[in-house]
Image (cartoon, rainbow, N blue to C red; front, side, top):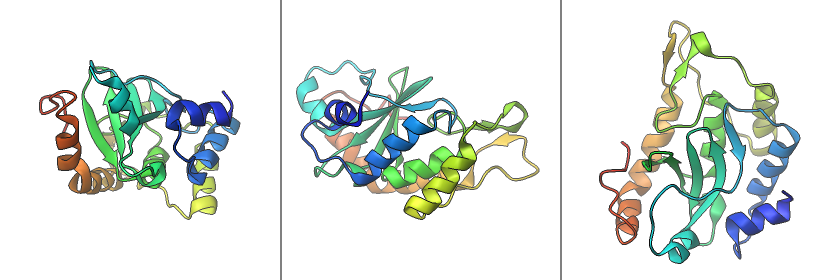
Length: 191
């Protein structure tokens, strides 16, 4: 898929943020920079009646083995919109306040999920992980998230937890209120 096709399928009439265009190009040039994540346009796994209005604000841009990532666009600015993760069971969670924080999360190099759990015993670094870390530092002055502590065999990154908590503090109540007319998400919002 070309950048223009991706822009049209993801954002429609919205302006393509420079950061998203660069991220798209990086991913095209360096597949396998993060476990089970690729830029892709997929449908959200929810039964939504008013899909036309729903997809005016929910703009999918990534695919994982178990779900989809999307912008929740409220002011025509995708780069500064929160990132929502939808898993294959229909559960969802805000995982980053914007694309830059999401890009930092990807440096953990684990499957995107509601919690971003990592098992060091089973971990094998993605082929282009270090290239990705160097690129986001050089291109956007973004630091990678901290990995697990040296003595931990599995668990969660403290930086990733902080990123998710900040995003939820800023957007969770607003997102749930916005989402209610489409479907009740109290039971499917993962926290």
